[in-house]
Amino acid sequence: MSSPERVTHADERVQDAKVVEEALAKAVSEALRHHKRAGNPVPEWRDGKVRWLAPEEIPDLIETGCSESSTGN
Image 1 (cartoon, helix red, strand yellow):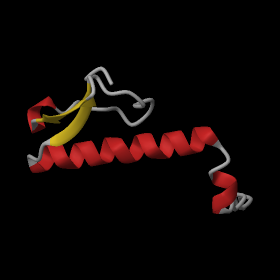
Image 2 (spheres, rainbow, N blue to C red):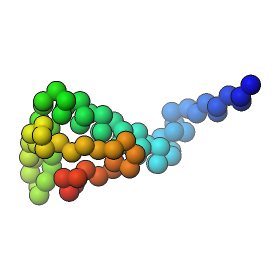
Image 3 (cartoon, rainbow, N blue to C red):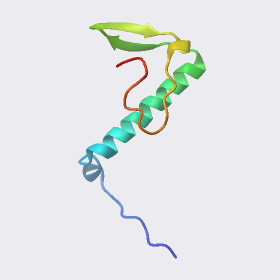
Image 4 (cartoon, rainbow, N blue to C red):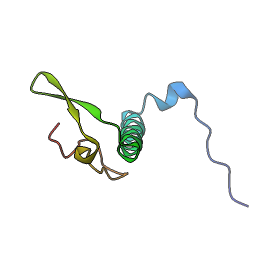
């Protein structure tokens, strides 16, 4: 029988910056994938302006290490 994993509380998890960054990167990747699949554009902040990316311009981000998109942000 395996030992149970340690249960952490939300306040402990947000203290770990790496865990927070990984969760945010995963959420962004999933949101971009959903928008691209649905054919919806997404906004991007570039050179002090908002620019809308067409679905075909949305980068394909990998699940791990996707903290920066291929659009140069």
